[in-house]
Image 1 (cartoon, rainbow over the protein chains, first blue to last red):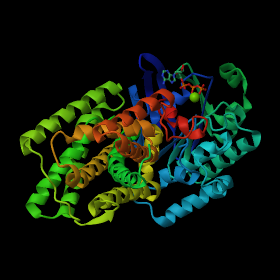
Image 2 (cartoon, protein in one colour):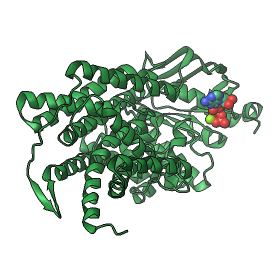
Image 3 (cartoon, each protein chain N blue to C red):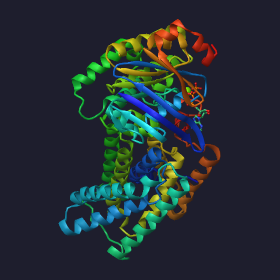
Image 4 (spheres, each protein chain N blue to C red):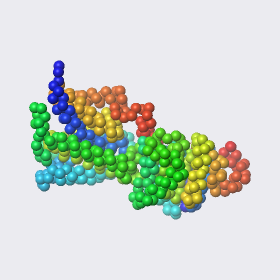
Length: 235
Length: 302
Ligand SMILES: Nc1ncnc2c1ncn2[C@@H]1O[C@H](COP(=O)(O)OP(=O)(O)OP(=O)(O)O)[C@@H](O)[C@H]1O
Ligand SMILES: [Mg+2]
């Protein structure tokens, strides 16, 4: 469904991705691991059209999407939850959700269903719906960022380090929502530092090192043989 | 020295009336800045073009209100074309490039108006005649009506921003262009639409102002200057702040004109501008930097 083939990305003159190839199939949860600064976030930004790949092919459902504007990718069914969450701080929680809901072609009934669904998964967002996004705690902002992406009814969600800096209770809530999304048939490309969570949630895992994919294996295989993980991640 | 109470009241009404028209101009300017980081130095010339289009329509049809609508629509379409052709390619460049571009547009529009409508001033006939007595003055109802209409337009736009289905697109894009885009909001279209809305508000102000001050091809400069002062004092890109600042500055000028001549009263606006830049460069009417809202512009740059 989503395929990167030999993608090269630059920030100005610095060459960050050196030929990344990754594939995500419909409804699949795929993990992307790697140390700090190897280019995981850049990979997601390249998919989302926030940086343009200089070389290689990015395809979604068979069509090339390299260089397409982010809003068009969102319409195709790709949603993005950035590392820094990027909540609209001055908008209320409900208004943050409305940025994904207030679009042409969505019936009032479907809007309400989508809202009730995220309120079901994240009751705290219902409680705080009239509060400014900027006043939420880090964990609540993470939930809002995921909930906001869900408003787009995406086929795939690009999740960048959703558990970074969260308390264990919040981490388990994120784990639950990944499961819910997976059950609903939404594919996820999950960038994480939390290795146990990634191995548990994903079916396959890519490991990146210095701008390239060094290793690729089913999660079950990595769970059984953690030596590879030690080798690349040093954990 | 004692200032007579009736003078103060009359100048309060004057200040509010001028303030509301200025607020309508400044709203567009601040919106355009807030959403695409462009200081539109041609904004006053959109006021001027709107006034001329209005005057021409009135001459042809005799209807002020039709002229009001036609001017707003024509200038909105014109503004959209202007943004898409000239400003869209410059998005994200050094602010100097857009300053030069809009300054150039301003000159072109003024020369065009001179060529099209000639150097002599036009007068728009006010649609509401009649006056009411205010102390020793016969105060025209039309002046009060302009404040009301300007306020109604601003209010309607405010409601659209807050509750309208696409109002949220504008607010989200203002805060974080990139995340808005990732949420499926067509940011280039929003930019063009906001420029068109700002241009329509400018044109509406021009037609409303026509009966009060006359229509000339150089009238735009004064609007640009005042709106710019208001936008800085109100906090760049802050809609509510600009509206408050427009009223504040206009009241200041009105009160000053009790003591000095009206042409000297302009000085207090500049003083307000300079004092704001010295002591509160983020604007008088924005939340203090300690509160969460003040730094929203920081996030957009990444
Ligand atoms: N906007 C930018 N301009 C220039 N260089 C950048 C920019 N963003 C990231 N980089 C550099 O690109 C490299 C890869 O960054 P990226 O954010 O993709 O890493 P990451 O794998 O997500 O790391 P982390 O685990 O810390 O989030 C880093 O060396 C980083 O310094
Ligand atoms: Mg990262």
